[in-house]
Length: 126
Image (cartoon, rainbow, N blue to C red; front, side):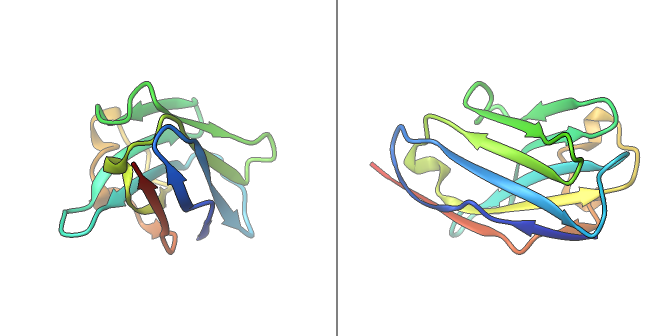
């Protein structure tokens, strides 16, 4: 699976951005799609995930209520909508995918994800 991540850029505090994560050459069906982010000098952290087959979603506490994941009807793209951005959201954002059937408690663990996009930089100024 090849993932194409995009949509990053510069934003001001309070702005919104949307990050698409597109599958190349296939559709999503039983996959789990997730976003992780890594800020300079910090470890990669879980942001959110969606289990495609049942549309279950999970978010980290730091983004819950501000970020939302959605999917398209063509089953080729998932979206991370980021609202009310703060400078603390500045990071490289990665989308990842696995065809494993993960339970909810495993969605946060990046070791379960087999395919990764190239990362897109999000920079939020105050």
